[in-house]
Structures are given as C-alpha cells and as structure tokens.
Image (cartoon, rainbow, N blue to C red):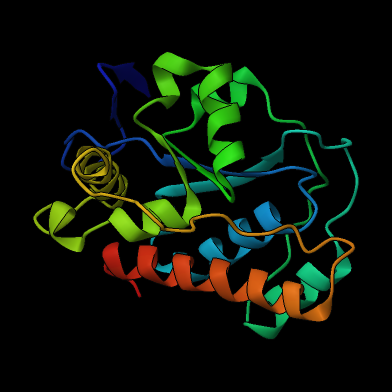
Length: 206
C-alpha cells in the first residue's frame, strides 16, 4: 500500500481506484476520565455504520496515563448501547494533534490547548464539541460517497462557517462532572449526547 498526496492507493482493490485514508477524530478534556472518553465512545456507537473509515480516540490536557475511565461515564455509555473504551487515560501531545483530522475539545479551553500545541495543523481542525455540532451541516458532504472524505468536507464547511456565524451568548462548554452533583453529571451526558447525535446526522448515519 502506497501513500501519495494524502490518498491511499490500494493495490489489492479490484478497481484499483484511490481510497481516502481513515479520518482521525480526537476528543479532548482535562483528565481524560469522563467527558472525552464519553464523547469518544458515543461517537463510535453512532458512527458504527462507517467505523472502518473513522478512527476515534481521546486524550486529556492533564491526564494521568493509564487511569481507567470513570465508572459513571462507562455506565452512561453502556446504558446507551455502546461499549466503554478499554484504553486508559493519556496525555494530550502535539503528536496526537498533528495526526488528528478533527479535534473536539469538550470545552473551549481544550480546543485552545490543542491549537497551542500544533497551531498550523489545528487552527482550522480544532473545535469545541458543541461548537462543531452547532456549525456542521449535512449538505457540506452530501455529494461525497467516501465516509472519510465526507467527514473532511464537514470539517471544512464548519471551519468556513465559524467566522461568519456569531457566537455571542452561546455556551459551548461542557462542565466537568467529576466531584459535582448528579444534576451536573446528567447535564454533561445530555450535552455530549446531543452533540454526537447532530454530528451523526450530518454524516448521514444518525
């Protein structure tokens, strides 16, 4: 298999036609214990129909590597028919951001952290989760058949729309539920679930 100008040429393909490589989505929070793995797992569940084209992972700006996913977050994933991530927490690095085609921070601070680590790569590819869900439009990828290329088209459309869409008064952050009340935890799950659903609909699998 040969990489050339961002397209994978699959020599084993009967048609010999270029195939777009998998699209890599990275979700980010602080400890990588609750919000970002929850978003990762729910996205994996909702995008299952195109799972071979989409690679999902998560990281935390202050994560302690190897710490397992918070039990309450894992339970929320199971309750929605998903499977909790089997990987432990990992720290956000410039390398992870560089390799991602889309970075979704659960709060604005996490999007900003990704941009600081890799500004050239992340500036147009990093969003807060709810910001991306607010800006994404299915029509941006309506004529694109390949799921990875479709996701790339959605990101380009959302990035172009960001400068033209006023965000005054919009709360795109998802509060950290760790150490908080049950109400905060429920709101966290709800806000992430709503965003994931909008992204899945835009991808045509919602």
